[in-house]
Length: 223
Image (cartoon, rainbow, N blue to C red; front, side, top):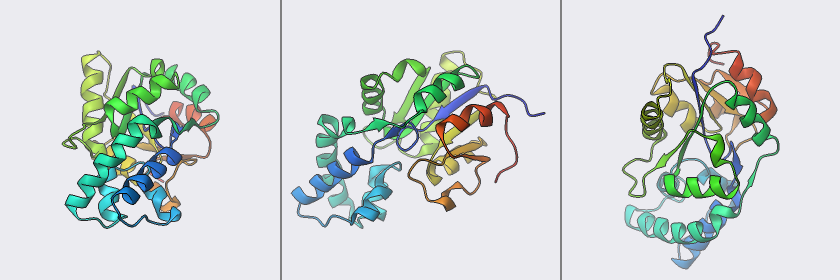
């Protein structure tokens, strides 16, 4: 029988919050204001989840200088409006409340930590989490692996047992970032990730209501 997990790390965009509208709208406005091409809608959703600078490079194909200018414009609108152009996924609050009975919860998101905290407070989710860990504003901490490092450090400071963590997220960045720490991932199948992004995860939850039973079962072999 698998040992129980001692702490549960949770992604934000695509796992707790359906935040695509605010992210893609803020990016489109920033690109338009700078006279840069806006990717088609089918590609804009690829920005949701990973660090924005990665998307500006990989999806929009921008050079570093243009990417930096776009990120600044994006953040101005996103902090003011876009962060709240979102809504929690149906059933996620109830799932998190049940998960919290199994182990402490922590947010581990590539979104800047201050913005993530404001969003969680705005939607009254913040009290569910022992810590909220995110990217730094200067992008020196932006990869999911780095964010998970911060989450684990903050949890240790709070006296939480981090010997057997599990990650819940929707994108390959969550799976790979957790794997860098030897942490298994349960993929949120309702998020923005393509099916192939679940490779290496230990389980796929089709709906938030599936999460408590999957996490309670411990860590099986990767799918």
